[in-house]
Image 1 (tube, rainbow, N blue to C red):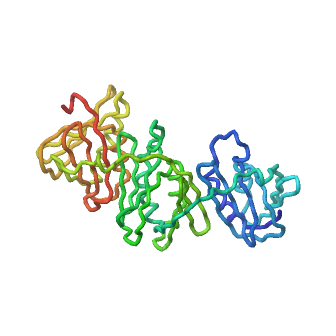
Image 2: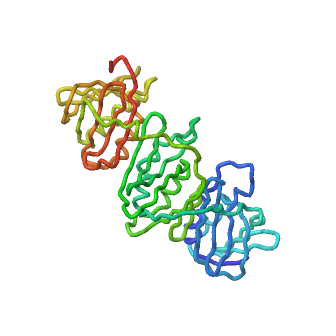
Image 3: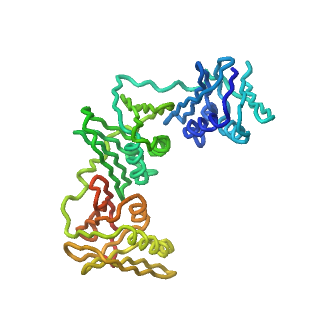
Length: 370
């Protein structure tokens, strides 16, 4: 195998493909990048057997071939070369030679026949979604995916399409994030639980261009996402997702509208003290059209007061400050609505101008909120 390409193109391609490199694996071949030639392109593939990323870059192919080169080392070698053309060749013993900027590096590779084949999707169906919409959904929900949980379905995010609505849902047992959008031209129902790590990688590869689309093919426990020059294959989490609609309250005893930026700053300042304590708590006290934000720890305390628009009963309620910080970080709006029933029932927080994005946060029971 022998080809020439620009350093910039190869670096960009490796940045995409190596997102699927595993952190640790007993299977040495998975630590490599599969390099293949095709017409005027080089194909780069990485996989951790849960997610596989395949991307293509333009190149001058002098001799076709395929081989596997150690991923992290190859990436570092290429990044240290100056801008310009890079010549790469592999001999019959799978030794890769990288030449560029007057430099030559030899790297021992492996036979491409040892590399896993791409996942095959049986009886696949296909839908098309705007990339910017899918990216927005992932960014606004993935933080709520459980890192570890005995219920494996909570370690992934639910992508669901039904009745012309597209929804992305994530929850970890303490909070839930839901993002909805309209997509009336899709008639088929669709449901897939995408692993948390794959969600983050997919979100980074999607475009903000409103004219760019992603084709999603699915069947069984596999999902294939096709972008312009990149293909993503995902092994889905199997199982039945939580019936999340049943845990979202529909009626509330107290509704509060507050300007987001002052609330965000107040929560941020209070979190400095809350994180120094043993319970990481932040308390909201809502009464008479005002909201007090309090936190206490052995090292000190914080008190913030904001004017709010209040409907309904006064209430004191406590939250884990991390969850409130996540809420205010990902909402993009001038005002938010906080919907409450009592000090131990789930709280719903959403932008005033966007009912299709909501957070559910469970409060913490304390004597201060009784």
